Image (cartoon, rainbow, N blue to C red; front, top):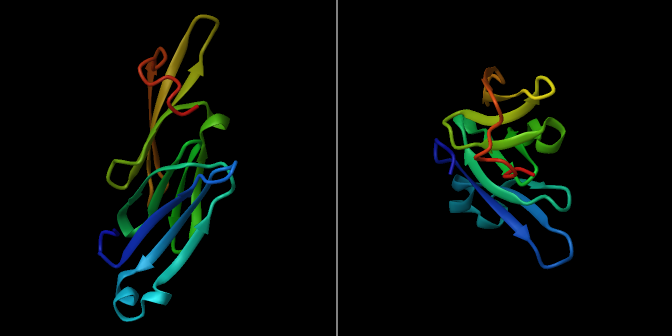
Length: 145
């Protein structure tokens, strides 16, 4: 449910075939009261084999969608800010912060050295705060792979 209670987002996952099909429908609560058959204002059909694991409305009706392989933000019936886990070597991701996405990236800084970047991204302004720690984040390893 959006923060202003105007929209309801529903995630649908079809696992009946050989490939997973994930869809998101955004329903207008106002239209649902007067005309339920035309209450769906936006439908997003994701490419095959992407599993939705969590959805959450952020500030200004931005819908954050956490998939098994990335994060998308849907705003005003279009996608913004795709983040792919495999391309960026992301080992942990969360959309549970208010108006922010959080994820970690493991970086190699030498032959025997590594670091972890914790990135907290504002979903409204796309401003990123980056924090770097020494060593890899072993506790959450393989969650996003």
